[in-house]
Image (cartoon, rainbow, N blue to C red):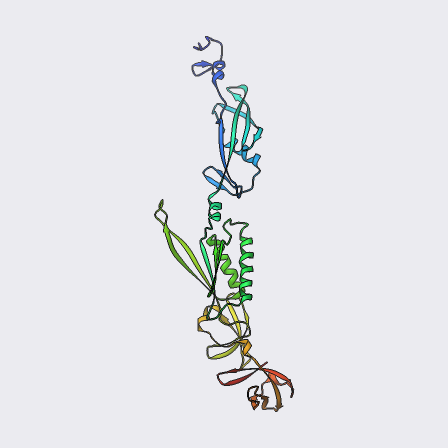
Length: 347
């Protein structure tokens, strides 16, 4: 066949022209002369293929990836080998070249291309939220019918900090931009709802209590028309503490331990322990605090009674002898609690 470009009649034809004329204009690859990549200046995440990638990658590797993503290889090329080189980096601009070898219609060819990669420092959406003090959740740390003690606030602060540090390995919004110290308790503002829930669970794990969530509509997403919500999570810890005295199901108990979902109360009349679900907290009445415990002295003892001195008026009070009092001795100091006009000797 006759090549209209060079007049040759004895060469392989590619379409309407010979292989030599075809290869004169043929490019194995296409790559832009200028490529721009975005990197967050705060967390080093990269904007790739329409989304932010949160992983640490050295700057040179970012440049190589940008080159690879922007190379288009012609369909006619086979057995291609592509070599990428960074010639020089000046500031935020990397001068690069791409060397390609491959086969086109059985002919081994090579070509080189220059490309410039510009690194644009910006702020990713997540870091933008962090910098603006963005939050999705408010943890309301409260106590039921009492003031929270200073040592409880200190412990709560430690739990919030420790939980958020642990969460930050997988959640960039695991942070607390603000703590509102109110008369009724602390409000912890947490960046993400996911980490907020972890904080609430950690507080409950330590103090017990009840968790309630309350979503509040704050605005509307103009692009989707969907409502944007923030979640208020109430962590309400019990009115009672370890050592306090409560009334539950007509029994007077002393609280001996508190856990995440339940607490243990010991019936001060029978010395029997009861495991009570924390969800029943609203059915519990605090009758005396641990600091209301009084100290007195045993003045006499018989098989039926143990006699103590009332610490208020120094009168003698007979208390039914129980097995747990058998080892008490005359003159020994013991503890008692006064509830509803009755005196209970504590073991």
